[in-house]
Length: 425
Image 1 (cartoon, rainbow, N blue to C red):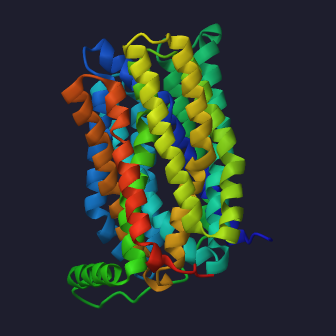
Image 2 (cartoon, rainbow, N blue to C red):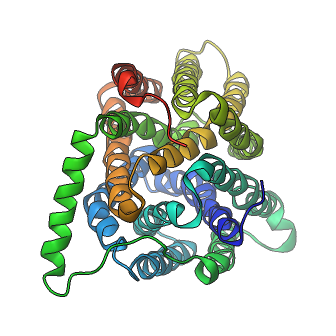
């Protein structure tokens, strides 16, 4: 399959922004934040979950509005640039602040902009490729995101953290430089997208009453989603399972830090996740072409169920002194590989399947609702984690509570099975 210039540029933005997901959301910064927060007498994983929940809530509230404006001719690219600038700016702020509160604010605001930018980026999928190529192009985006933005800067960051003191980088400098690398990488590899991607589907902007018209369009889209049972059941199931996926991503290292697992061991395990995710994302797209996206999504949900259960065993075993930290770290590595096999696939197929079942001229608006389901869901996961941790005092029960999200998703997918039917080409 020959990939067009526009498709390559779209894929490359996943390469660009994945560095944020790895450095700021999944690996380096969560461990750094937990460390400095606990040094200040705070529970790192608790406040990290709160910051994530707030970022998701704000994004969720404005997502339909962002999507609706993105559908107007000439607006989609402008919105993308605005969110890119905000994301880069507050990520840079996170690199220079030495306060745990400042770091939490930098993370929360940059996370909001990262999410909003991704909403607009996703809505460009119908603009850059055809319906029958969406699964593969979406999968390539996640795959190259993992092998590029999630791996190369990650390796450099590990080297800085481990050996920085040998070249005079002491204290927090290696981590601050790692965040700075994330900013530069994100910016540089966004250039092809900014240069080559154009909006090819859209609707005319009203001559007056733009806000009234926009809110009216949002209401119409909500009704369309409700009446189209294929879209409706899919986004409700997505609401639950993507919440679990996101919470596993954002809470894994904070959870491990609370259990006193070795930080270097966890970071290396997450590097393995990225390396495994590269081929597995492409494989997911290829298999989905043969047996269907829905079946592959079900497989991924079941794997995540197993991840949560093993994660619980890891934490509970430590809390009850069934085994030591070394055994728990081995389990963490097993979990890292398991997540790597499905993480890119479940995200890529969710995006492409939704892109295939919506009208391309209103892609922004529909992806706005797609995003609101994902972001409002992402409030539940960290909130459920924090609530369970607060009630039980145990992180192991907090991670086990995420099983609920995947079970509900499986039930909804089963109930809505008759509406999915044959998949569009």
